[in-house]
Structures are given as C-alpha cells and as structure tokens.
Length: 234
Ligand SMILES: [Fe+2]
Image (tube, rainbow, N blue to C red; front, side):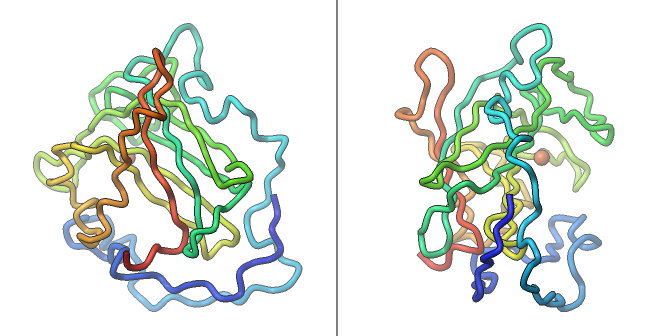
C-alpha cells in the first residue's frame, strides 16, 4: 500500500513518554542506540512514504496466530483475543494501516535460531501475524498468551509476558516498534525495558483485560490502543 500524502509537520518525539536511546539498565541499547544526532532525510514528491506491499499478500488468516501455522493440531497455551485502535496524536483513527505482531509461544520460546532457551517449540505455532486496521482504525488478533523467558541482560533476568508490535503508519518517520504487556505481571517490576520508559507513560504499554472483548468459550479479551508519534501529556 502506498500513501503519497505524508504528514507535513510531524510531532517531535516526546521524551517524557519515550525511553532514551541509550539506557544503561538495558545493555544492548548501549551499542544499538544512536550516539550522534539523527540526520533528517528530506522527503521528495513522488516517493512512496511507506513501504509498498500488495494487498494480495494479506490474508484474513494472517491475524489469527492460533490457525496461521497450524500443522496437525491446536497450538498449546491460553488463547487470547487482542483488539484496539491505531490513532494519531490528535486521536484520529488510522484506517487501513499495517499492524505486525510477533511473540514467543506459551512456553516462552521464539521460532528463531538465536533463541536457544531450553523450552519447547510448538509445531502448531509460529508466533507471527499481521493485519490491516479497518475504516475506523481498529485491529484484531487471535493468538496464544506468550510465556515469560530468560534473557542475558543481567543475572536471573526474565522478560515479562509480552507481544511485539511494528507499525509504519502514514510515513516512515511515524514508524513505531513497541511491546504490549499484560496487567498484573509480577515481572514488570524487574524488567529494564519496561522500566526505562518514563514512569508516567509505562502504563500505556500494559493492555486492559476486557471481558467484553472475550470470545466466549474460545479466547480471553485484551484491549490495547496504539498511538503513533507519541501521545503527549495526559
Ligand atoms: Fe520478546
């Protein structure tokens, strides 16, 4: 999908809401985070403002991670339904925008060669999905609640249960890669990725449990809105 009408005045990153590029508690940011001022790349008329992809490549099943990699049975774990809206900073819904999701399985293991965590892979679960928002900016995924997993950031480090999201929005400068957490997770209090987000903004990363979004007899519901280009004070 191509959007040639890029916003002309993007809102600056709100450092009261976003984590710093380099966060000492989150070790890999020290080498991955920018160490020099960012360079603004001027956009030119005629350039696509977001990556181009064909709508033909998107299937309805892509947003159902309980079915999109099923081989010979159901994926293991607790089924969940995650819904919400994608909005801009003025609260306007972003229609037909791409939302990508990836995650660990119920045992806390990714389908990735780098992940050598001693936990089982699930032959019926890939842990990746995508969808477009509808005309009202709404998205919907069915998936499995991910497990916590250990990582090498510091001794006895465990990531809270989380979903990864990537969105491109209306233009490349709007791109957001973020994580969604689950309410009541005791590991949040020990997670440097979560804790490096300014305190007043952290709760925005935690989904709301939403019984009304539950699919009775199938999946518990969670609600999670995503705002591109910062949300500002509230
Ligand atoms: Fe992760």
